[in-house]
Image 1 (cartoon, helix red, strand yellow):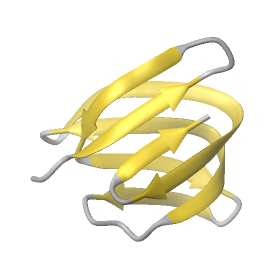
Image 2 (cartoon, rainbow, N blue to C red; image 1 turned 180 degrees about the horizontal axis):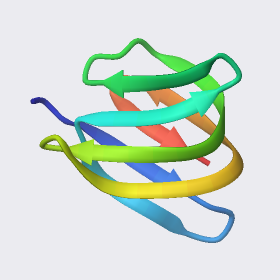
Image 3 (cartoon, one colour; image 1 turned 90 degrees about the vertical axis):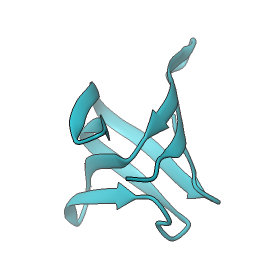
Length: 78
């Protein structure tokens, strides 16, 4: 499965900077997934973000709210 670059930051530092092949999270519409070649978009996330690589969960981050931006297969979350 093809991967894409993921960069997740909190207010002080970079929490994750690496590759993933799937991202799962929640927004006001409910749960959703992001895969390689996903359309560009921005969303406000709720609850958590889960990163996967080779069908294995590699990172799970819980929070109240975050901003997600996908542009040219670079995913950034703040």
